[in-house]
Amino acid sequence: MRILIAPDKFKGALNAREVSENIAKGLHEALPEAKIDIAPMADGGEGTAEAISDALGGSWLKCKAHDPLGRTIEARYAWIEKRRLAVMEMSEAAGMRRISEDERDPLRANTFGVGEMMLDAARRGADEIIIGLGGSATNDGGFGMARALGFQFHYEQEHEHEHEQVRVTDLLELKGVEKPKDLELPKIVAAVDVRNPLLGKNGATRVFGPQKGANKDQIDVLERALTKLADVIAKEFGIDYRDKLGAGAAGGLGFGLMSFCGAKIRPGFDLVAEAVKLESKIKDADLVITGEGSLDQQTLEGKTPAGTARLARKLGKKVFAIVGRTDGNRQVHQLFDQVCELAQSRMSKEEQMKRAAELLREKARKLAKNL
Image (cartoon, rainbow, N blue to C red; front, top):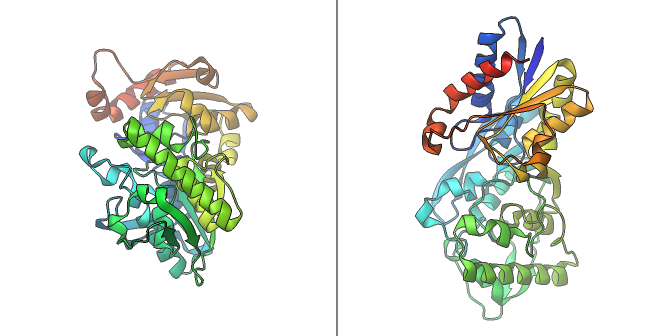
């Protein structure tokens, strides 16, 4: 029996490779004769650069950048020399993981550091940049990134800011944007794991703003700020991507990358699947095991387990999911032959995360007995 293990990370507990290896250990204990292949996956969120780099034989580069609140940091991104390809994650500079819970401030947090990473890759001669758009702490529509790239923003009352002093509320007074004359960027692909537009009830601010620390009043302000940004860009550049699927990813950075950099939006799962040759690996397997930390309605919007399951189904393979927890969504569960959940009523979420590796091995052993 040939088994392919292709999960995403269990956020806050294990990365995709660790998840894969622990499932493989559990299976091997119960099925010592089975041939097991692993393909750690991602879908545009954190872990995307690592998955693509591992698959394509990349190395890691470091550069100076600024975090969401303007503090100097050292950021890293993957480099695939044979393709002159840079693979980065916006969360490396502007992610939630860069700030503490009590520092969350979407009126102030910005994507300036993402622009700095892009410039570093361009200066190194990149022919293409892939940017994963998951895990953001920002809601600035790519405003900060554009400033780092040299775009000039003009306001009703002119004021000059250092990047760490910029606030998203400045956009409420925006009257014009000027492109830098000497900016040369390579092809840019934005890898997304959500399909939200920039604005409205399903947009960046209303859906994701609260988890970044925005209260009701701030959500209204942020929505108006991003509306003004979209209006001014439409007037100045003659383009309008506010309703494009994925424009709302990473607090509107999807919109900013399309508007300021001519980026193409692609499902992150597809990009990673191509890099790891997932379809070919599924063809060679008898069955597939995938998973992630939480299986729910959002899984259907381009997350790794759904993408892997659909590919497996297309190729006539059985597919199983081992997950941290599930909300029991019927539409999601129908994608799989079986869903195995680590969560146990007698165990707290914190303890479950701490013991994730052990629980994965245990669950894999149990699943193996039914294969």
